[in-house]
Image (cartoon, one colour):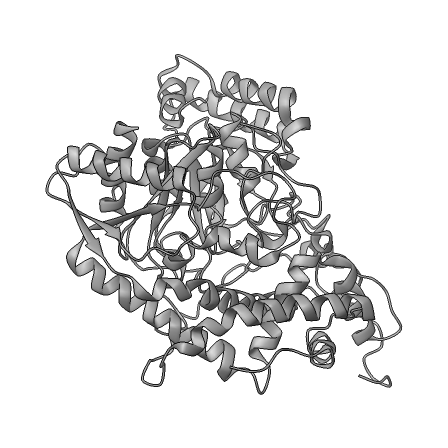
Length: 100
Length: 471
C-alpha cells in the first residue's frame, strides 16, 4: 500500500469532496488520516490477487417493474423544503463565469 | 420497562387504553428526558391523537394492528412526512421530509404510536452519540457513561422506559452496540429484510434497520411487522417476512453453536467471562459448542473503515445546499457547496468523507477501496465455511461495557475499535443480535451477540430466547 498521506493530498481531496478546510484543519486531518492509513496497512500482508471483489452482500439483479402511472412526491411540498426556490424550480447561485 | 406484547394485549382486550399507555410513557419522558437527551424531538401531541384514534377503533370493535397502542421511538435518520428529520446534523436541521419511510408506514398501519425522533451520532457515524450536533445522549443506567452509538438515543429511550420499543439503523454495529451498553435487545436483520426506503443513506451496502426492545419476544414481534419485500428498495429481498415469535420456545437442543477461536484481541476480561457463561448456558440447554476459525476477522476494521466511508462520501454528496437542508450563501455555486458543507457537517462526518473520497480517488482506488472489497469477500467466505459446521455463533457484542464520556473522543481509531465484533456481519450481510447477559465488574450490562447466516433469523431468535431464559 502507499506511503503516508501529505498535506497537499489532503487539500486536493478536500476540494474533490467540496469541503473547504482551513490550513489548521488540513494539518489535523492529515495527521489523523495518516494514523488511520497506517493501521489499514495490515491488509498489505494478504495475497488478494485471486480474490473477487465483493460490493454487495448478495448478487443483485436488475429490478424491473411495469411502466404504470403513479403519484409522485408533491412538487410544492418538495420545493418548500429547499433553501431557495422560484417558479417551481430550485434556485442556485451563478454556475458559470467563475473559476471552479 | 413495559413489554410491547403486554401493551398490545392490554389495549386490544380493553384492560388498558392506548391513551393511558402513551401518557405513562410521556410522563417518564417528562421526568427524565432533560437529563438523558434521548430525543431530538418528542411528538407528544400527535402521539396523543394517534392513541385516541386507536382507543376509538377498539371501542368500535374495529380490527386493530399487531402493535396497537405501542409507543415507539424512531432514530432521527428515518423520514417522517412533515416532521423534522435531522440525522443529528446541522446541515439537515429544520428539514421536513415530503414522505414517510416504509418502516414508518408499516408501524402506523400496525397501530404503533410514534412518540419521537431519537438522537444519534451525526449521520450515524460514531459509537457513543458524542458526534451528535445537538449534544450527546446519556446512558440511563449511569449518566456519566455513553449509551453507545450510533443509535444511542433509540437504545436509551427503551432502557429509560420512554418508549416500549424503538427503531435504529445498523451499518457497523449501530443497533447492537448501544443495545449492549444500555442493557436492551437490539437486532440487525439480514441485509434486505427491512426496507431502507426513507432511511437516510450512510453506506448503502451495509445499512439495515432493526428493532430495540426490552426482551427477545418483543424484538421478534416488532421485526415481523417491519420486515418484508418493498418495491421501493431495489435491494429488498423478494420474500415474505419470516415467522419468528413461533420459534421462540423451540430451544437449542442439538444445535451446534460456534466459538470463534481467533477472535480479535482487545476484549475486556469481564466481558469474555460472560461469553463463557453464555456457552455454558447453551451447553446446559442441550447444544454442542464447536470451535470455528474466522482468520480474516482481524482485517474487518480495515475493510469496513474503507468501504463505509467510501460509500458515505458518495451518499453525502447530496448535501449541497440546493434541494434540502441548509445553505450558506456564496458568490458562485462551488463556493456555496463548500461553505455549506464546511458549516453543516461535524468533524467526524468530514473525516469520513475525506477518508472515503481519498480511498476512491484516482491513484488510490486499487490500493484502498479495491483491496477492501476483496477483504470483504474473504470475511464472507470465512463465515460460509464456518456455517457448514455450526448453526449460530456467539461473540461479545462490544469489547467493553459502557465507557465514560470523553474517553475515546480524541482518538478516532480507539472509537472505531468499539465495532470490531459487530462489523463482520454487516460486511457479510448476515443477521446478528445483542441480548443482555449479566453485568461486568462495573455493574454495567454486557451484551452477547448471536450471529447466524443469511436469512438465519429463526435460528438466531431460538438461540437468543434461550440465552434470555438463562440470564
